Image (cartoon, rainbow, N blue to C red; front, side, top):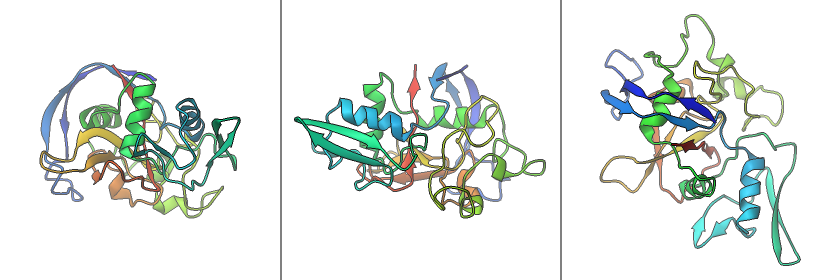
Length: 235
């Protein structure tokens, strides 16, 4: 977990951003101090949670879909009246994917934390920057900071898909994979009259514009998309 000192910032995109979208209205937001996981939650971490909670091989628990099965890295065995979740194919340190908002929220609560609010997520991602990305693309390459569609299709490993966390440069707050790899669930609803939750950050199959600090996406809480993951916060 990384400590983030609170403060105020302009959330969203200015009109001058050529890639700005209609749902990125800019306004001032104040956030308090919080801690956020340095990386997205990994397959190994999520497997431990599923085992501890005795989640069956379907990936459903108390009538809620936590994780999409079958999964590219996780499998479940049943013996002696116990469900044990394992990670295979060397995917221990890949960010867990195929996670619903319900599954992300359940892990965060089990860990004694919560999902980040949308404001916390963007504040942590921006790390004091005001540019579309937390780097200046005229100085450095997005490829050095993010796994996204432009560099993932020729990446070593399993082709297009998640890559181990921590493999790219960190943002000014010491966080990694805030851009690309997996979309990250946030605590918030996507608007006041919707049944969808917010995702942020872009994913391994996203264009660069989805990796901007203000870029937003949404999905139903039970939707466990193949490129959906998360990280958690502690107050």
